[in-house]
Amino acid sequence: MITRVVLVLAQPAALALREQLLLDGAREVAIYPPDRFAATVAVGQGPDAGLSALLATADTLVLAARVDQLTAHTVTLADARGVRVLPLGDDAAAARLAAAFGLASPVPATGSARDVAAALATASASAVARPAVAGPRLIAVWGAHGAPGRSTIAVGLAAELARGGRHVALVDADAHAPSLAMALGLPDEGPGFAVACRQAELDALDEIELQRISVPLGGADVDVLTGINRPSRWPELSDKRVRAALAACAGWAEHTVVDVAASLERDEEIVSDVIAGPRRNAATLAALETADHVVAVLAADPVSVARFLRSVGELRAVIGTTPLTVVVNRLRRGGVGIDARGQLRRTLERYADIRDVWFVPEDRRAADAAMLAARPAAEVAGRSAMVSAIRRIVGEALLPPVPVTATRRERRGRRSPHERLVASA
Image 1: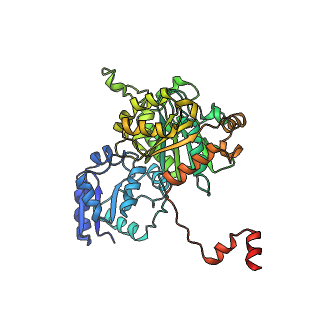
Image 2: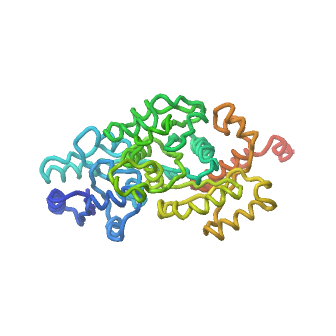
Image 3: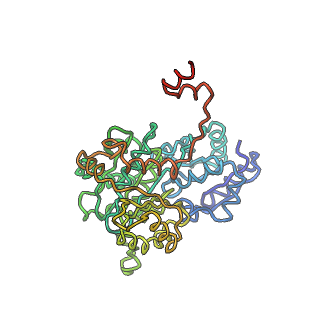
């Protein structure tokens, strides 16, 4: 039974449904403006104090099954507070969107308030809890200009996240210089992220369509949405399209890793007379603003560090309170001198207040082998220092640790044959 519910619906339907739910026995029914919800919560800015207070005691969140309300951030917010999501919708697009997030079929929004309230009560009674996904669903990989290794880190993270049978989507949303298709030896003339964006705008991007237009990486459960094959196609990656496509990906895969470009400028601040025109950096900004976690990459050399320090403030302004993991790539002594780790840690802490830093060492042999084979480094050089470092980032910074308690028999079973022979002697 619905007892405490928050309605993200427009008037006058919200008032009518509220009165009916109270008549049917609901204890508390609050109404929250859908336009405010779409402009803040659905894009990842988080709820205001009023909505936070409502969700703290609510058991059900009712909203329209539309891409501007039912997003990965919305579902994550509800999961974190133990609030059940009941979507409303009348068309096939609403059903596909709800299914993408593992929700029940939308309750028809047409009809009287009594009919909608009865359908909501039925859906609430039969709702099945969504399986929890450990760690962030949408991870954006960003880095300042100068090729610090964004794509290399993105591929490595996707390969490691897929370990253990997880389904991972790897998306190339770089509107300036996409490279995942070339690095992985995948065709870039066919469907890819641009097609996903167009289909999402038409409310036609479901799991079947995503499976059709993606390219399986092989060797791991990673499906790749390749980037645009010509930089001139960047207008296809508009803000609205990218947000809708990434929301669909977040419901399709357990984790989605998005490789984005370096530029963070908002074109409307420069070209103010074309407010409604397309924005070159819309894909990067949309991915960063909707991400659950951002991985920022810089190379271990003075130029890359300087560029990163000049851009990290702008990055923080874009992502707000989204968790940020900083990765120093291609670490070597020759780039910054003796005690490279210590120098880089002190520099990042002093000038950017970054205290938690992860390092990926320079490993030309593994990187060359991966590029030559057009495969992730984990497949061709699984024991390399680079792969081990990325694996540690995934295990300790992105995925929460899973405590394992072994029984005495299990611990004995892990001993080597020599140890067991000695113990039995």
